[in-house]
Length: 99
Image 1 (cartoon, one colour):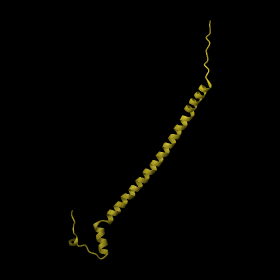
Image 2 (image 1 turned 45 degrees about the vertical axis):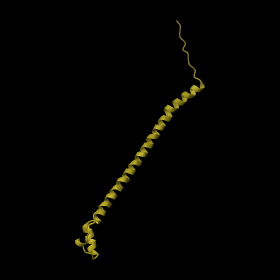
Image 3 (image 1 turned 135 degrees about the vertical axis):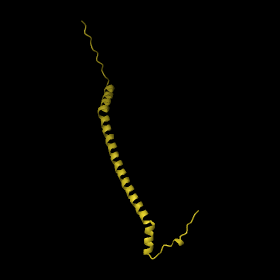
Image 4 (image 1 turned 90 degrees about the vertical axis):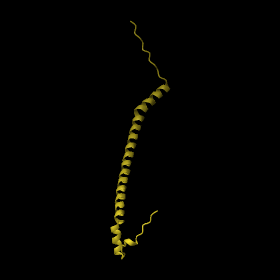
């Protein structure tokens, strides 16, 4: 019986280096970059939620100020201020201008 000799392939120095780089990239660099990008994405999402919260608060303030403007510009309020200043409301003195 003959035994077959297994021929072993020798890698060159450059091939060994390339194999090392592929392994290093696949097991170290890729997972590290994945974790980094996930952390960056998470930080960006947190900042986005902060900005959304600020926008909502500002919208609430704007709405409250708009309601305050409407209240101050009401006819009843204007008449009260006019009468407290000694002025009177006379509908005959109001002129309507149309285009």
